[in-house]
Image (cartoon, rainbow, N blue to C red; front, side, top):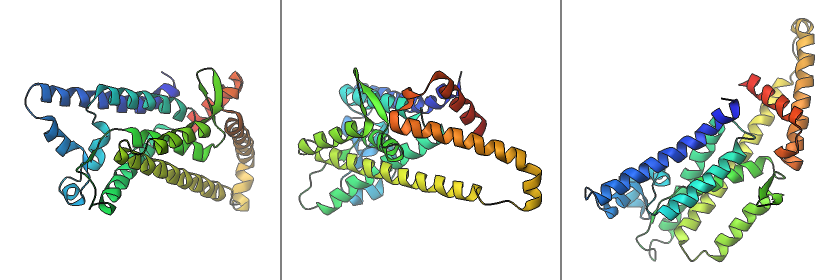
Length: 265
C-alpha cells in the first residue's frame, strides 16, 4: 500500500463511518426502537440556541447523520471527489483538521442565522456533511488558486467549479435556506484554515532560513546545500501544480515528489 492510499483512507474512513451511522439510524427507525423525529432531536443541530446548549454534541454529530439515501449519496460522492483532489496535495492530518473545522463552521453559521432570525425562524434543524465537504475544496483553492480538475472531458480550474456551486446556492437559496447558510459557514472556515495554513508554512520557512552559527554551519554545509537543492526542486513542482494541476507533472516528477513527501513524514 503506497502513501497516497494510506492518506486517502482518512476520507474513506469518514465515508464508511457515515454509511454505518445511516444504516444504524435507519435500522432503529424501521425497527420501531426510535422515531425519526427523536433521532433528529438528538443528532441534528437545532435552530434555537437554548436547545443547542442542551445538546452541544450536535455540532459534530449532524455532519455524519443523513435521513434520505439521495442526500447521503450526493454528500458521499462529493466527499470521495474532494478526497481525491485533497490527497494529491496534503496529508491525512490536514484533511482531518480542515474537515472538522469546516463542519463546526457550518454548524456555527446555522446557529447564528437562527439566533439573528429567531423571531421569524421556523423549527428547522441542520444535518448532512455538505458544509464540511465544500470547506475541504475551498481550503485547496485557497492554497492553490489555479489548481485544475477534470469535469467530464473538460479541464477547468477548481476555483471556477466552486464559484459555480456558490452561484447555484445563491439562485436556489430559498430552498433549504438553513443548509445554504451552513454551506457558507463551511466555505469561510475552509478559507480561514487555508490562510492560517499558508501563514504557518511561511513562518516555518522563515525560521528554517535563519542562519546557523559558524561552527555548526561548517559541519553541516554539505547537508544544508543538499537540503536547499531539494527544497528548491520541491517548490518548483508545487508551483507547477498550482499553475497547471497535478496531472501536468511527468512520471519522474510525480515519483520525486512522492519520495520527498514520504521522507518528510
